[in-house]
Length: 366
Ligand SMILES: [Zn+2]
Image 1 (cartoon, rainbow, N blue to C red):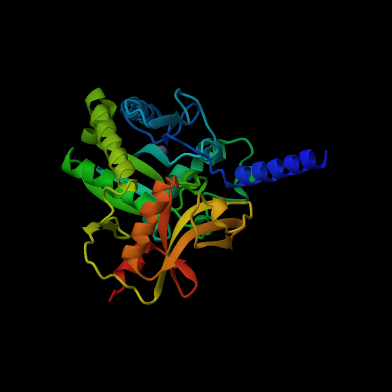
Image 2 (spheres, rainbow, N blue to C red; image 1 turned 90 degrees about the vertical axis):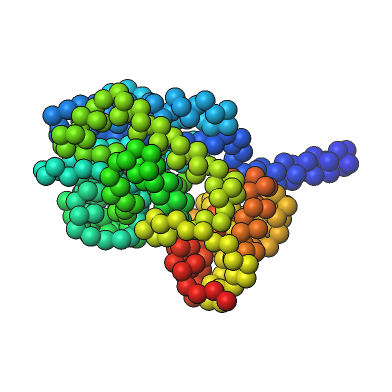
């Protein structure tokens, strides 16, 4: 009887440990496609097709192409002309434990401005940035009880947006990487005007816990671009180029493009030097984030040792490795990837504060 009890206890402990160490195992790379607006919210005014219709058509085309890859799973925030709350869009992605969130929109202006731009949630401030984010955020006023969902956020108040920007920027580097691939494709493959990678406080990007971008595919108020975006040809071309950028991004996570460094404004440059010590910087690989406090033991982290834990804004962050050598941390990131931490990424810490990796790499190395 006692032996039986002991076995039971041991198996219970084992089960408990296993359940703690089990990371959500997604064999597939999950992409959430978010066609902006829908239903009672048509999006920006235009002479051509509505923003909601163009965004949906492009998103459906991207999804159809991505689904041809066996290792990719596509989830849509909407597949029809329906209204979806902004917070629900992010929640769909979070529930799916998605690897990527891509929101599709069209721009509008009272001039004949044109071109495509991609937004990431970030801290570069500016009046025009405020206006674009404000226009896309205003949709929450159509939601029934937005005060409850957005904690007093007022799309008309710049200070509300700045509040959003102060949130955690864990995924900024990866978001910028995808954004730069998108913009490069628009420019080089489609000869669209490249308006660049930009940062602002979009609610829809604030709600997600994964690399996230918002693509303004072009201006539907511009006579040529509006016509192009309303055409099947234009929508197919935009979708193809977005799909290609997503695939390139996915490959870069597997280490294919590991020698590329992305600057804060989205410029991509190569990094091949051997000796790469940054004396003021500590690099770590963030492998997980959770509300649960786990012991930093290797059995909780697929056999990886040298794990550290930080409590940041109520979330426990788990890191692998700790070094001033950028080459060492890149190797450790690959190791974590091989262990199955498919969304792990490198963070840079200076004077106890996390700083954007791109800024850390701009500081001089020995
Ligand atoms: Zn929009």
